[in-house]
Length: 417
Image (cartoon, rainbow, N blue to C red; front, side):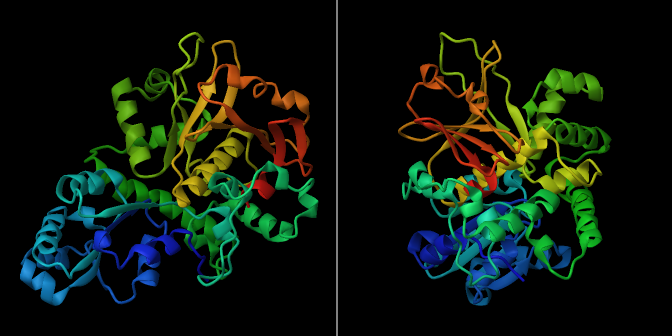
């Protein structure tokens, strides 16, 4: 059983256009790139560049042979042999009726070469783990219903349409099912297989972490010893949702801070973490400049920490922020993401900047919220350089609570599901 992907409609609409003769997909390993592209472009020949024998054969193909043998092809894990990107470029420049899709799980290795060789010749898309609206679909043909957050970002609705209680949501059961899966296993497509039991899914996640370390990390850097990186990965998972101080991590790991920063960048480039920069445009206010780190997928985080069961408040914050981030990326809205913390302790978990203003988020794992939970959001516009469009408190509280005219408490599952 597959899940429909929001990006499918976008790709289907551009796949025959001139500017889409080369499409590049990047994203974490096992995020569903190959399945998606095969679904959308069944007429394309699939070539796995991971096979070292075939890889050498593909390197020997001239532009003419690419044109005659593979006029339409998917090159999977193309970062394994960056020279092939030059071959595709040459074929593209000579023949105007060839089309290629390049897939890769390393943003660094793939995109650097793409930007160097294919600038102006390709469209680049990033694919993320499933979102809650995607998890709620039955199969590839099932329509994806946008979340309230996505509708707001699209300008299709506003907070006045939010139900007074999640209990009144006609899709409550569907949303809760997706949410429980997301909490327990994360959002990688392989884990929606109904034939897998709980143990199968935990084993898959454990193997995913091991494969990531042995393949993706070794692609990014030729480590003689993976142990320092593994320790940082565990430390980042342990402190997900916290401020990142490279010096503190370096001291704990026994390496220098530059090494820590480099390792963190590897985690970001391989789509394992989101680095949330600090918002700091107010010159008159003392603001924290340290970024916050959020693991992209809660299932992978749990596997890194080798734990099962409930989550803590920081992990809840990370999985909510990851979901907000993925959903915005999926609908291609032009927004930027920050956190904000003043030196006197005022904190905004997430600021989403649009052209006209900000959406601010306070994230609570509590089953009940009150006006006191909005204290950091109230009058936050006095610090910001654009208007506050709306402030949200996302929690497990079923009731929707209008705390001020532009601050509202909403059930996280209802809002994002």
